[in-house]
Structure formats: structure tokens, C-alpha cells
Image 1 (cartoon, rainbow, N blue to C red):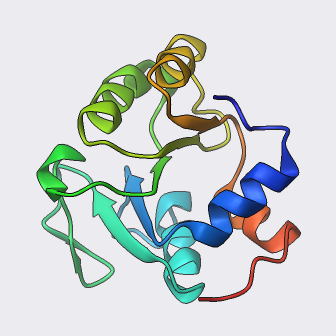
Image 2: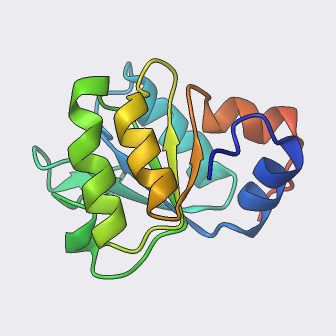
Length: 140
């Protein structure tokens, strides 16, 4: 279900969520994924880096796929090019994620529609950090 324009649903999602898998996370502090994951860690979320190129990011174990985490996560925060998001969505569905959040310029309409049809909440072309700040979600 697309909740992109539903501020109250996004507020509820960010308030209730405990775990955020950051797909495309990077140890490079110049990358948006790194910076936003650091913000989410500071906001009290359990951030789980997902990137097959690394074994550790932010001093945390980095997983190659969402399914390899071995448990469901609340939000899958995607930092991948739109053409790569369909495989991330399929991985999120298989891993029983609750929400797929497409960061700015990452949304792939077919992938987002697939997530909607599978019953995942979706947010398209929005930044988790900006939404968290704008909606004034309290730190955990």
C-alpha cells in the first residue's frame, strides 16, 4: 500500500519501527546511504547494513541480502538505482519486511507496485531522515 502522501501513516510507521535495513549502505561517509544510516542509528533505530560488497559498515555486521539477515525487519530503506530495485523488492517480500522505502530517485514503479500488491507499505522518492525530522519523531 502506497503511503507516500499519508503523513499520519508515515508518522506511525517511523514511530513503531525498530529495525531498518539499509540496502546499499556503504562505509564511505560521503555517500547518502552512510550518512542517513548514521542518522537513523543516532535516532535509536537498529540499523542493519545490507550490501554484498562489505562485511561490516558502521561497526555493524553487513549482510549480502535481506533474507540473509534471518529475521524480518520493519523498514527496508533502499539506496539503489531504480533498475536494481525489483530484486530488492523480491528480497524484501521473501524476507517478510513490513515496508519498502524508496529513497529519492530510487523508485521503480513496477517494483513499487509489486511491493504494494504483496501487502508491504511503500514510500516512494522520500528520505527517511527528512521524514523523521519533519514529523518530529522522538528518539527511541
